[in-house]
Image: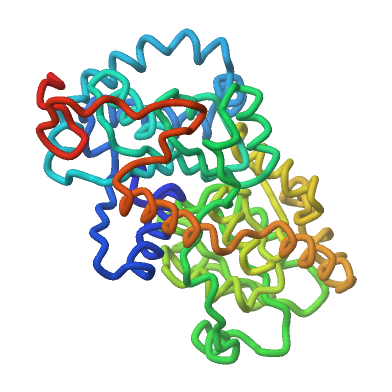
Length: 392
């Protein structure tokens, strides 16, 4: 379960599904957008509020994000919303009858966790974090396993009272395609790139966010020979602007594509905002990260983690980016140190590890019941797998 189809959460869900099918071709995987099981009013309100805050009021979002006082104040409202949506969720569960549920975003995790608590659902629930930011909205007593990207996050959850047995440090799940080698010459040829010049990959997440136009104007002034591939995602306006411009360097613009792993395989470095999935994908390819315009909250946490581990450089204002990139290209040894650090903290097999654990749960029909001494909810009166008929 995830939210919205163009999000990193969806990519993470797809990566786990692909890994599951690879490990067991007979497995039946349902990839669900949790917003499809909420009211249109709630869905629209959440999306409009989030987009408005991160674009126009980032300081407000930073204040709200992972704020214990806010979390406490909205707990009752969240509970009411979960109960309001419980009937739709119950219909989904009765139809699918899952052996296990994994959530790659906190909203559906809360929905399922609340359903387990109030209706006795006896299905293992796995929370898969997709940022280096263990915010408190993930915390629920009925989450059986937390999959976190790094040891630092494990320690944060331990401080919140989550037992070691309920935490796995597997990383952020990326598509198994990121494990595959590519034909560099063929990829360069398919995007119209020269084989003898560095390739800088520029991304702004699935929505093409950030000051990408300013970044391009700045890097287009750099002196070293270089070429750029700009992935605009669903931002059609940005893609149209790119294709109307004339640049000093070769600039290739592409929209929403499924071949990011190919581009990361041939890139010299990537300039991007530090979204969780983009970050994990770049690390999986050992690609040096040059970060710009992180969204307050989760992306600031991602940036801090990467800089601390010497796997990324935090860029300044768009007009200064060209000088920073030019300096980096003149010192290949710095790029190699970034690449080595990125490789050292990468967990490219995360999706496979998560899939293997989910299959283990499914095959056994239950979680390990000794997790912190907790027992699974009683299954008396089940109308479907793990779903009591008297749930309502």
